[in-house]
Amino acid sequence: MTSPSQSLQQITDNWQYVSAGVNSAAKAANRDPLSVKIVGVTKYVDAELAGDLVTAGCHDLGENRPQMLWAKAESLIDRGPITWHMIGHVQTNKLRRMLRYHPLIHSVDSPRLLEAIEQESEHQQCTTDVLLEVNISGDAAKTGLAPETVKELLQRTPNHHVRVMGLMAMSGLGSNQETALQQFQQVAQLRDDLQDSTGIELPELSMGMSGDYEQAIQAGATLVRIGSALFKGLLDR
Ligand SMILES: *Cc1c(COP(=O)(O)O)cnc(C)c1O
Image (cartoon, helix red, strand yellow):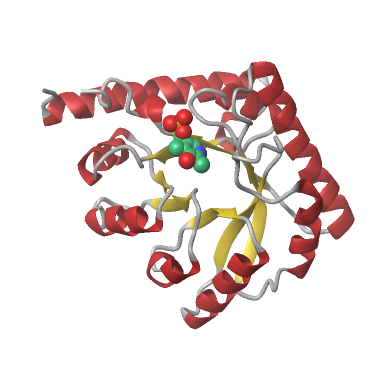
């Protein structure tokens, strides 16, 4: 068994290790380390361990299910400012409750979802920041929009209560470091092309996880979504 203080110590060590890794990957790519933010993915753990990650210094937390996002947001309400990130599939009937916590939604993958976010944000009189999820590897098993359809969706964005801030992607199943890097570079290129052709600023690139964040940072990621590396030593008890 791991005691609460041992868990906090382990998570603090993991956070410092991952932060140092992100820093050196940024420097190796001639980038400002402050231009890369770590989103701590807490989907594997309960609110208590997610709270330990906040104590360790991570103030951006990501969940892949809306119900888990609002449950943790409600448990951690007294833990100081936390920016929430929704990184998984969103059903439109979950938006109302989830938008109260003003998440950045990384996983917009359909015109219908974008329209629903616009409507619910209007209803709640807020603006919601989103990323468009791109299926860059072409894997049938992966979610996201085909690269060709992203431009159309971007141009159709109502843009009153939704702001598209950039793109999100995952490397394909079974990618090695080299193919992951190529895929992330394709996402960055797509972003550049979209900015040029639409005139819309897309500053954020959400890509890279525990196994491939170095390649993602090399390709220009501004948000890396890290789960298992932050909870190492705590997951297979
Ligand atoms: C779980 C998850 C992550 C984190 O993955 P790790 O390999 O555990 O770092 C990142 N992005 C998405 C979309 C996820 O579902």
